[in-house]
Amino acid sequence: VCGCVSFKEYFHFLLQNGVSRPTQFLGFLGAVTLVCAFCAVVDQSLLALLGLVEPTESLYGMLFLQGQARSLATVLAGILWCIPVYMLAFLGGYFITTLYYRMNKLLKTVVSIGVPALCILVLPMADTALFGGRLGGALAWMKRFILGGGSESPLQSGLCFLLLACVIANT
Image (cartoon, rainbow, N blue to C red; front, side):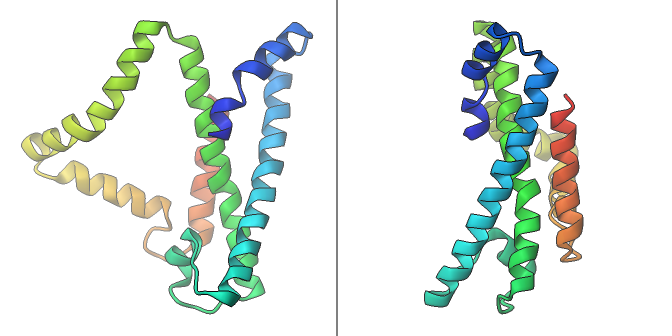
């Protein structure tokens, strides 16, 4: 949501004041990094504090800790894992907004209806009818690889999210 709402108003304001697009984007990227780092620290700190009162678990804990007790090392690892995840989400929202900014009204409507319909209706039917479930298996493998490849490796997962964030930032 933050990525979606942080584009248009500031984009027009900065263009009117003579700030180039590359300068705008580099400033935005720096701000995204700081905001995501701050959010990761707050998120993991609150989880650690709430864990003292009531058992709670984050996505990082569910994927990689598997019932282990929280320590300072796991909190720091959670922070380092959450930063690229938050950056990917933030930049994904920004990317979608910039795409919509460049589309006309008809194309916006087609994309807004077509992409969910493709994912919910067409893809599962095509996978069953044409591919015999292999497409779903490939997507499940890709999800497992991005989330650590079944190796319970937060480093691999974090690097995948950081690489995807870099790819989105360069488009």
